[in-house]
Image (spheres, rainbow, N blue to C red):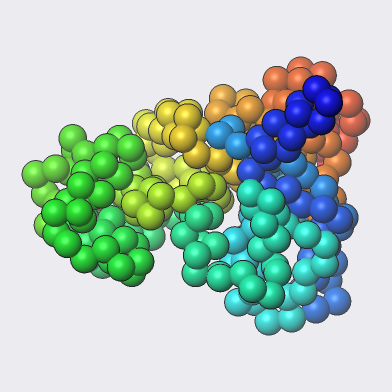
Length: 262
């Protein structure tokens, strides 16, 4: 009886699971039998060479790939034990629960305030008092409030690149997601801005499940709890980050992490 209880507790800790996941773009087999269990309130890094399936995997979780012609998926993608490809899935609600931060900052051409308030307004929150609370809270979570609180109604396009990326993160946080997907969120930023994004990731994992694609091995080592190494559409190895970076089990993983790959 005790064993069942422990298993149930462990099951609850998985925020995202994929089971025999295969993804195709036409005849191209982009992801092959991917099985991953991603822990709740932790940071999972996806590493691997360009074109290995990392971003495809990320976009499969919140169905961003649906927009690509000839995209086809087999297997299961579960977010909090719900199959996101089930016929009754509300894709708008899914993308609210599974937010996305892209490689380059993409603030809307509107004020800082309106950027953050955009999502809550779409989901029916209209009262200014409520929106004020959400905007302030989200900007504080994104470690941006002190820098922008006196210029909330000025254009977001006037912010620096690093500030814009934190604003985009605040915009994601404003709709209270459960999972945050990040596709190389710091690759277009300077070292100081990158350090701020990394610190923010470490703070956000107290409340959110974060999955991050990165080409930066040092970044993966600094911010993630677990790491998955992708190669040619397959997961070659998945383990705790410390174990993978110090004692990789697969020779291909070791070659990639050490920079001798290829």
